[in-house]
Amino acid sequence: MMVSSPAPENSILQKMNSYLKRFEENGYLLLSQCLTTETTSAVKQIVSNVYQQWLANNAVAYANQGLLNMHSLTAPHYFALHQEQRAVLFDRMATPDLVQITQAAFGDELYFHGTQLFFNPVNREQPTYWHRDIQYMGLSEDDQQRYLSELCNLHVRIPLIPETGFELVPGSHRRWDTEQERQTRLELAGRAKSDALTNGKCFDLQPGDVLIFSAHILHRGHYLNNPERLSLDILLGKPHVLVSSSLDERQLPTDEELELVEHPLWYQNARKLIGSGA
Ligand SMILES: O=C(O)CCC(=O)C(=O)O
Image 1 (cartoon, rainbow, N blue to C red):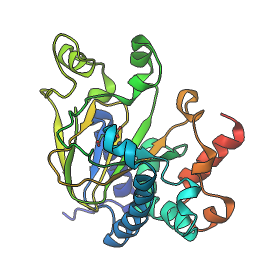
Image 2: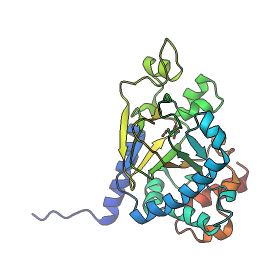
Image 3: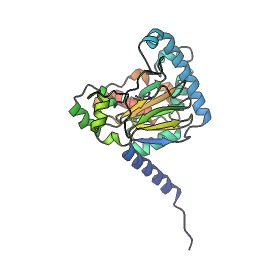
């Protein structure tokens, strides 16, 4: 008997469904070697330039305040000397694979909310901290639990150098803390927020890999495992008034820049949100 292979559209659909299923179950999706070397090096070159400018402007705070991340890398002032690089960054971040996978798994409304960059603090022995991003949104703990299932905020993690620097608790995006997790995250009952959690999963990431994870999953970075870190997060989300109202128009491509982006869906959706005043 001849066994016919599934039509190509069906196998793509099956693959996309399996991405969604894996994300729903675990709260993350690891896409190994999803970016070309050309994409990673173009992004790394532009991001490093922005990072150097940020370091120069924040040298004292970086040295004294234990800073380990920056945000808003697409702000126009970082591109004053190389304006053309801004459109290149928007274009290279929205690779056809990433736009297609995120659209199929999370829907057509997904929008670009901004960027963050994670690096080592000056003192690499600085304690790490387990957290859920939702705990910094000014909500009561009851509301944090209530909104957990309503919010879809994703970090698309792009390591620009190899790192074993990120850990999360699989599945914790769809349930609230266990006793041990809550005591650790909030430093209760003698526990520290850097204490190990029983179910933590640490990722060994290489340039080219992409890790998509829920912003509200229990997670932390590690600083001692790698002499250096440079990990870009593209922030994507489904519109929700609690988060999309903080969308900053200055982080989005202009009309002219949008013309140069081959797969503009995330940015078009963000611009529509600004236009709608949501
Ligand atoms: O990678 C890290 O250092 C921590 C990441 C993090 O806290 C975040 O993406 O919200």
